[in-house]
Length: 294
Length: 294
Image (cartoon, rainbow over all chains, first blue to last red):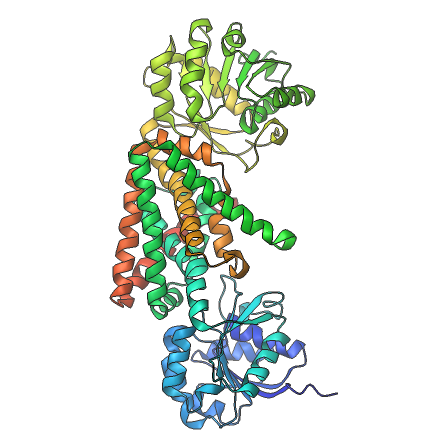
């Protein structure tokens, strides 16, 4: 029996780690026929075709989407405007569009601004990734048992939603829906803020000019700063596209740090131990709630 | 040929992860004869004897050190004053004393204040540990290929220094010396500040009250906050015993966060990307300098 959500022609705009891995996963699942890649770097696109990730490619977004059955936007947030503008004139009426960006209210604003049928844009955020990038780094298992959060608008097209949901499920993701504002707030806390803190921490240590801090760092500093090796451009786009939530979380972190600073300056051991204990209890509880799953 | 630095009778005050692991490592190396444990919890001391970590034990610091050839203080920083006071009256003239605490100027101040021969106190900080505690968690390999930083005073007793250096080397540590102020500043940056930031980050997220942040945290938050599961009491003691350096690093972190906040609020993508890039470059460079050693 033919899968009713099978995608005859998928257009992947941005054939990097995420776009490439979606294509690979869908091929493996028999969920896709032809895959067209769109990108700027010829070497990456050629490599993606060699690896069998895509069947053909073009640099031209408008040409690519003309006979698409599904469009996946897997570019940095900073390129959304250009991509949506370029695809708008040639996108057929009934084609679902999804994305893989880290912030969702921004994605929806750009879609509403440029696409002829914003209700067929079903925003998605697969919570998966590695520190690698490019088609070469992609692999079919990237999404297995990872969350993929969809944030459809209240008036989203039901058929588009069903198709996009089926596509992400076929990658192996656990698909759930929530509203975009909740998504952006939650991710600001658990992802964007830790990245900002890691970048800030490395810069603070770097400027103290004390040689190589890794030499005597027993795990803590290395683990803590691992995410500071992430892509500066990607993270610039993410924090700018989720500005309000990110500023809100930065404020909250600074308040906590200020309270600790005061307690340390005052030698208030009780307040310090209490703050540490509350953090430890919360983390241990969250960890426990996941049982063996972490 | 007998090892000239062989310790006939080692007294370990605090038979936990560190104290227990030193005793095990020295036994394995044939570097110690009898080991006496000192502690408050009978169950832990009995268990340490059962496991062959110590030969005998007492609750009384003064009694224990009376015929020691070497004393290792492996208690939380908050207990240093009580331990030094208790050992001072019965410590023989020529007995070297070392410790394993995380901050060294404080340890030296307490030693100078209470011990009759502070020049025989050779402060040590083995950069090793796990998130476990207690004698049960100790193991002979804990210090292998880990740094152990000694911070002897300018007028330290040469013989005591040689004995302590030999002892830590016999645990498998790579022993190096630096001045205590440099040590405390360096560790404030690479260890104490990351712990404070992790505790603060968890508290900021906890108070935002958004349910279980681990559910959608893809590695970053988990890695970043791992050290927030450390002992609140131990870390309270550490930050209080290194107050000036810790406050200094907290200021530096807050300045970085404030600068980022301003750039984000202003939508200054160039400044944001530059700050992220500088952090990434520094971290990548440090990592590279360690070659395959990480």
